Length: 452
Image (cartoon, rainbow, N blue to C red; front, side, top):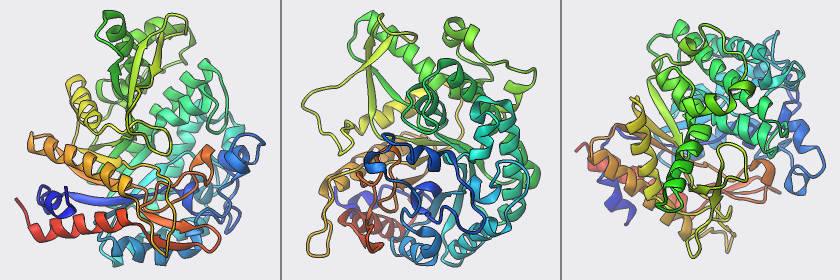
């Protein structure tokens, strides 16, 4: 579908934006009072990140912020989802607030507003201050309260001008990828640590919601979950049951406390002895009503029963002969609808934003241009699914393309490109890809189409 045809399926008040994260783009890792975070340490540990790449410079956004805001404006984006670096604002995790760090985000928000771009701030996108990690990191309850204090510092300074606040980005990654699978900082492989991190991230979210509302009761506040779109590998009863267990383990440990005030029964039954201590008011704090849910979606999970592995006794399988991205992730837009409908069946959800969606492709600069038709197909397919869902009456308020520009892709370093804008890391030159132009035209066409 052309961007013009698809434009007409979105009303004028549907929010189109782009998204980034601080550690992936900012650089300036030791400037103006910023201290190290767990990713600074992890990326410097041999064997952890492809090519030993770090976020020390990244896209140098810290020094190029005004031109990057102009870039967002040139894409016709209504909104920008960015994350605030905890190690910039409260460098030791607790204690003194760093004025210079806060001042950067002050300037960013003002620059966005000057360009009529709505600022959506994510408070935590994985850059835990190293000093706070030394106090136990997410395995320690103290970190939940340290996070609330940091959120308080941010809200005092920026709360009057933000369009929305997201507490955490993808707590699944900050717990499972970080403490169970060892692929993200701090790189541990320990089930008890994982479950402690899950609960303390949930508690941090709840405490931060309270902080945001104490400062500005009408501030839209939510959380961003990379909930998995789960499909049984067959219609055998054992695979269907495995998919349910997999859902409880990977999705339910966040969605159920947040939207139902409890942990999944299957998880408590299987893993109760290794769950952390849950204090009397924890679930009440975690399950406060939210103004929106952010969903990050990239690919489906297909699972089959596997009694040889621990709970949830399920293993992912890969389909053959399907389209895949440069991350080897399966492209399957209908699974986005499956996820949203499945979550809506399980829980009473607030309005939804798609806070990340996009793909890495094998982008190359040729004669000053980057032609990326596969990314256009990916975006088109997923936005078509969203338009269908909205027409079915599901309350989806906006979409943020991941990512504004190529950046530091965590354990993949600079080897994977997700941007709709190409970054030459040698010169830091930004070049809008064909997909960026397609997205720009989609947004501009929607504005001309008017409200339906």
